[in-house]
Length: 178
Image (cartoon, rainbow, N blue to C red; front, side, top):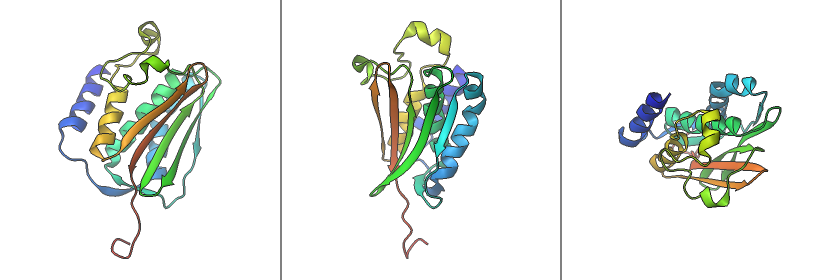
């Protein structure tokens, strides 16, 4: 897993500019959830998709966007309690699409929020032995956001959960690009 994550981070970080194609936001979210479905089932966690409008599109690299959202959903599963749920959704904010992953798990201490997107940073090293992972998932998400001219943000309350938002450019249907 560590090798796969390092290779993925290298591809995203050094692979040149991200493809800038119109891509269905609903399909990104669905594929991301599907990648994590067996992990969620093994933890008895429901991943709920609040399906966006079928015509909502982002501009970007499909592979990178699916990788980023999959990492966010996987983290949400790992840091949620059994028999809980995770909500995945998207909304349009002017020229941007905001893809959101919300969990109701352990949350992130305020002192750690500004460091969680660093490579190999772990909030709770003891718990990370139980959850697995490489400490690269959120670094991958940050690089995907940067490659797309967007951003990733998090709000979290310890003991209540976290919401991660990946913000990328929106594809607008116009007369020039029907």
